[in-house]
Length: 114
Length: 111
Image (cartoon, rainbow over all chains, first blue to last red):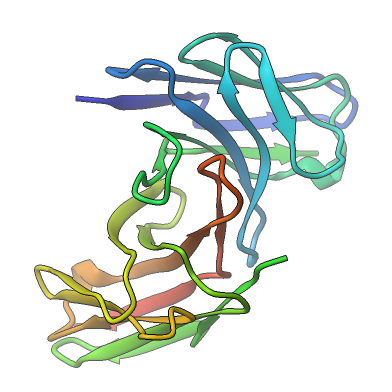
């Protein structure tokens, strides 16, 4: 069966420090991968998605970047964190493109920028 | 761009009571997904609807998509404390599999 791992679960970082969040998927190949952010009291905002190795699409301009160095690995990064980067970050995967392929989410990373 | 609006934003019910959560889209829905989230955790996929008038059930949770495919409802029968959490509806946006989500409905069930 397919599983998705996301780490760390929680992170407290000072303003200006770098960030690296990692997500890996097991049990499937060539998944679509997604990074979402959920701010307190707000819905999920899609940050990045990837349909293949090295293929990254950004949904909103921001202080973050994403990379997909391997088929089942998705990394969210920042060179210098801002206070506004605080939030709950969720990685997700889907098996294939189409409306009958739900997203499956990891357990999330709670990031607090101080 | 398409937007999903959920109502109510929050809901407190007594255990054993029925409840309904609505999700309204600004455009025709070509698929509608319901998820449940416990605070601080990831989203759990509940069910997916595709066709107008479609209805699906899982245990005590039933979801429907209206004939016009612009509104979906999630109905919980005889609510239990285990039903507590945040319910989110999501819809496909574009052809890359990405979903947009409603703001979520927070459900509390009082024993």
